[in-house]
Length: 206
Image (cartoon, rainbow, N blue to C red):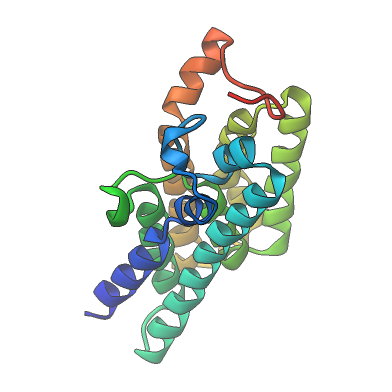
C-alpha cells in the first residue's frame, strides 16, 4: 500500500502540466503552436526565454519534490528510501509524459528528469551529465540531441562513478537505464528529423 501511495503521489505531481498552464495564463494554448509539445523548449520557442525558463524550473521542481516525498514516505514506513525515491521518480516522469489532465499527452520528460536526477544522484553524476548536455548542445545547437546524449550518458556515468555498495546501487543504475531509454523513446520523432536534417536548432522558431 505504501508503494502504491508513493506511485500515486508521484504521478499526480508529475501530471501538473506546467507548460500548458503557463501558456494558458498568457492566453495561449501551447498545444497549437510550434512543435505542439507542452515542454519548456517549445514554450521558450513560442513565448520567449522568460516563460520557457519558468516552465523548465516548474517541471524540474516537480521531479525534485516527488523524489523527496518518496523518500520521506518510505522512511516513515520503515521501508527502503532508495526504492521509495525511485518509484516516485518513475511515476512523476510518467505523469509528466502522460498527464491525465490533457488526455495523457504531455511533454518529453527532460526537465522533470533533471529534477529527479538532481534529487537522486551525487553532485558528481549531475555535473558530468550536465557537462555532456552543454558540450553537445553548443556543438550543434540542438536541444533534442543534447537531451538524447545526456540520456545515454546518465547510466554510463552512474555505473562508473557511483559506489557499488549493494542493492541500492543496482536500483539506481537500473533506474538510470530506464529513464534514459524512456527519454530516447520520447524523442523518436526528433531522431527522425535529426537524421533527415530537418530538426530545428535552438534560437530558430518553428
